Length: 482
Image (cartoon, rainbow, N blue to C red; front, side, top):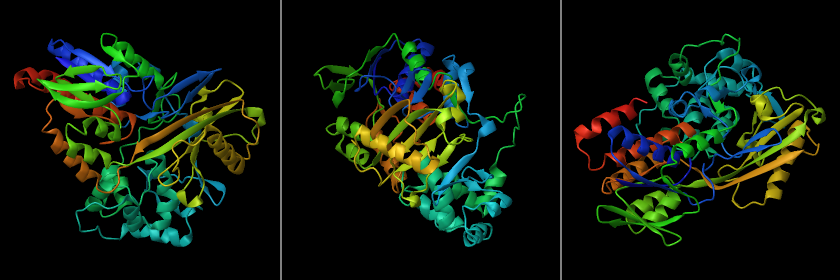
């Protein structure tokens, strides 16, 4: 079988790895090509090692609560290298009125589930706290349709709780506008809690898993994991495992057409590749361009998925030059604060191994829906935004010993209202294109585990094309159990 994976990010790498594995398990040879438009592997995973610092340009961790990331690391021999965030200094703060206020305890999957911390927190006014308490008594909404995340939270918990508690946490995940994001595409369990339990707080309490408590060392387990040398370890391990495939960088695909027995891919260089199985693990707008002639209706649906541009600025300082210790994992910034930054992670506190002794590493996130209209913002302007944020909030005015900027134009897909219907329309069009599937963050989840699962599922589906049910049963069952 000839197979081509378009896109060398974590979804594409996972798809290629899964295709090879399924072929090996089935005893079926596969001629595999992996084509990446840029000059490096990893997509938004970009790990830099400089002078003892481990700097992530994109995501810096993945969550263990979604099993596909840990499972892949286990297969790649990386499980023993996974480290959790330092939970002894796990405090997170919210910027409000120009000062940092600790996020109250008792937030279960973003929902306040404990009364006492909500009563004590200065993040909410007395009226805001009373409105929050109404969640215990408000009846569920009767309609079955979708609604915006911001509208849902405001309806259940009040607008103030949404703006000061939920919105900054949500923005840290989606970089989106909660008044546009689809509830059913982002946090569908919240609607389920409302219906089943009549209250989000009650649902959070009843749905919370039993606490595992501290480890033998006395530390609480962290759900945020990363390999010791950064997420780039996963990328490197996958590329190494794909050594038998035809791996090509700087190989942008311009179009995909039908060919006898499958598809023909045309690269920007003019090179052509034919395959029975194709996985497109590129951004939705790039996939739309490739498919515009093959299936104009599918391309139209893909173009409707909006994207937001973001950037990260990592800055290192001598600890002796910091005005105060960084006691926590960082802080988030609500949209209502009007800051250009979205959040700031105190990287060397969260993961001490990422900075050499005597130094602190911080990372400022910039860009959310409606706040970064220029995706090509100059590096100098981004550094200025980051340094201004650190000066105003943390009084850090020292000259950094190291600065790294990562720009991500049109990088964050937005699961806005209408996204569930759009995914159904995309799936319907794909039914008419056997052997071709889509993978990546634009569809069913934006985190690293979600993208891994997306690549694995797409690979399993295209590998199954043309095979009998008996031949398919073993490898598909093996994949489903992972």
